[in-house]
Length: 304
Image: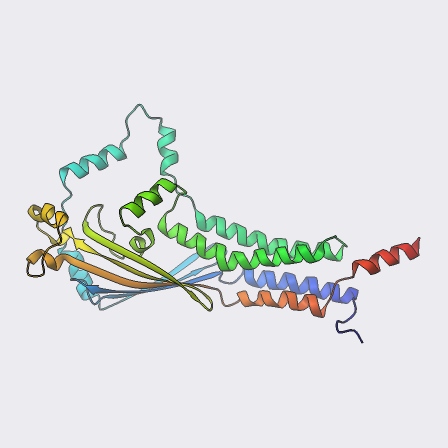
């Protein structure tokens, strides 16, 4: 008695229909769910907590943000006042207004950012279509069906588990593929992911002695980033003390020591709740097997 059921045309139809329905179900559901929870642990905005839930599907990014104990944070934003030094403002003006010698097209190209999340969505959509097309071609008698099936399913799984989370992180950090920027950030001790999840978008140069740390870890349904960002906010320091705070961290008994701010958070990237339905596809391969190639060749010889 055979362990696997015999091939049938009815089984081929059910297998194709099941694959299409699963792909359609995944197409209409959330592909990536991001949960963010952070808290100010040091400084004037403490103990404000920020929680955010992000759901990403085929074309939309839905965001829900909640803030707890926000009074201290609002007062912090109300009282901070950072006066950018004249030299820094002149440098920024020079960078924003390039000389007439440089072509305008080059400056525009350098300012363009790559939409990584868009690429991730397109790759995931292609993987679902590719999975359905391969299953139809197998019924038509295509060769190397086992290898093509494995590649199509592995590509679809990798899109949901790897490509979509990676594209979201790259989109969040604003990475444009320039290795020089990455090297400069590492030399300055900066961590772009921790910087971008820091709720207060401070002006350039407004944080002195800033430190950031990112520690990734695996979850049963995705990946987690433990983030930390800290520094002395010059918006809480008198302008005449900017240079002294930048040169050396204030002592605990000094008034400028109150400008220290620390923000700790966790960022969980998990796949959508419907992604496990992909496991039903190889199950259909077993319960509803396709036509063996040997039998196809034999039947062709008998007809001759």
